[in-house]
Length: 490
Image (cartoon, rainbow, N blue to C red; front, side):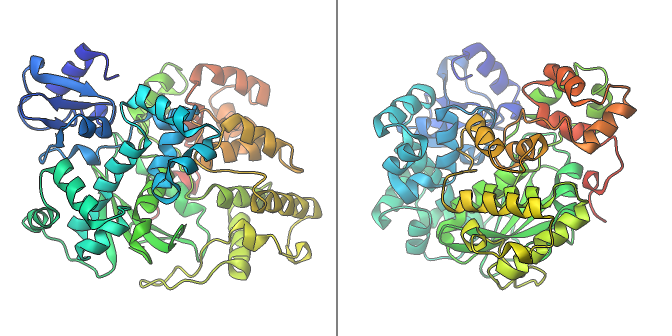
């Protein structure tokens, strides 16, 4: 979008927050870059230039605006709606892969050479993987500086910097303030009660956001010991590269309040990325809802509760296991089966607030389970053990960067994996916005109530007009039935 100057200028002059993250405005006279919704008086058109990423702005010598904080904009919705190499690379960079594995590790995951990845990212984003990762490290450092009392040396290494000198230089260059000045400036703002060891931050999103189905679904399907709904917040444990964590996510009118407790602060980037992915916060609800409103049967559902998101997962392998446990049983039964696995094979953790007791078991931990100990039909035991073996041996990957169609084919080849299970995993583990569940009982009930033919073939044909947002259409169709997943818990 950044190449459409006229459209970008209109967005900046109207301070349209819908375009935050789509592009960034760099002001030639002040050498500052902003988000489109920046509250300051817009600069003259001749003084504006536009970039596709914050990293590109920084590489061009611009520093972040202190008013609108463009580094905290929602991510571009393109990376969620696309499955090409650039989108997959961006999802991996947001997960901190470059910090942990370097550019060679990023390229190896994508199946390309480092030079090819560099060329593709430069062409589309104006910055290579190192620059994009540097911009993210700067944002992580700012969060740690402003929300914790960690010494600056610990902040530097937790944010992914290789040295304190690089950390200081980057923060000064990006924010035009020394790290100590950033902390002092934050201390002058509104004060909140700090909890030792807890990082509190705000997760931005594009409005509107309807929390009912999003948090209602997560709460209704929560696995005891791993997830819970408490005091208006969804809480769960997280398995992270350097340790584990506990997160509490609370819906607010203009953001999601996030409280993170981490055993190692180096996991902050990954934890934030996982939470944003879980809640689908980088979606573009205006574009989604506009497309779905073109169907006269969906339009009233969209108008009744616009901004529905697709509830995802923090770990693709975890959801795949839970999807198998949920085959042809009620939500309550699926939770019971999952809770038994967690108790028997999950790693125990301490939760300062109580309620959460375990991490969900990894495929490696489940690889040695005794099938006879599972209170499941024999065919489903085979399905589960085959899935776990494929995941543990890395023959099957269900990460955010996984190719959607390849994963579908690999899942369909496993015993016991029908269309419902495959599409559920594509929707919630892989994040495919066009995943569709024509065999789902709730979808078929909704179709009947709306006067549609409820056969899978007929539903698939009708859903052709909903593409590429059929996963969001599923969320609206589920609201036709009065189910706990559609309501925030009391």
